[in-house]
Amino acid sequence: MDAFSVSIADGLNEPNMKKPKMVGIASTFAIFQFGMPLIGWLCVHTIVEKFNVFRYAIPWIAFILLAFIGGKMIYENIKSRRHPEEEKESVKALGCIALLIQGVATSIDALSVGFTIAEYDVIKAIISCSIIGVVTLGFCIAGLFFGKKISSKFSSYAELIGGIILIGIGLEIFISGMIELYA
Image 1 (tube, rainbow, N blue to C red):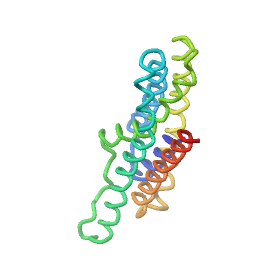
Image 2: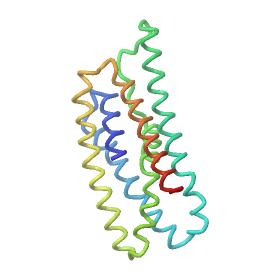
Image 3: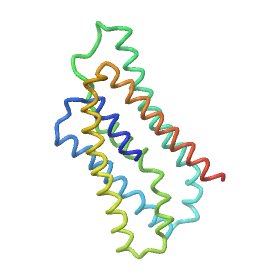
Image 4: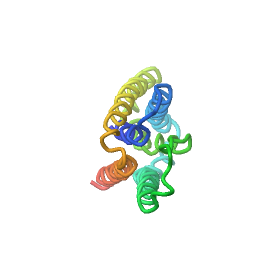
């Protein structure tokens, strides 16, 4: 659902996005959502003691990455409103680095899913992670289409709304991660 929400924000931010780019963005999220639980599963079977310490940093990392990207989007929107003469002719497209950061930030909490499938053999683990990836792909494509669709209604606020969504998702990951760790 985090990747779905970020996809909506990406669609809002780039309303003229072409279908190949949408598939690329959704595929990036799907690959990360496939890979992170598999990495978690692998860690359980190899270096669980060392990885357990990293578990406490996951909510912080996700929050910082998403808050940074969201904050930058909000800043750019406010800046363009203060200086309309400098307003961009076209919407700033999502770059590869930002997409990779979004992929990591929305999937890093999925590392812990690897712990829940620890008793699976390698085939079952790959099948489970593949299902997660395929579902993520579908949800993200739907989120991108939805974001593009509603962006026409909110075009002047799209970047601002997208930034707020990203920060909100970062907060949700952070708060739920802290509750899970300390409950």
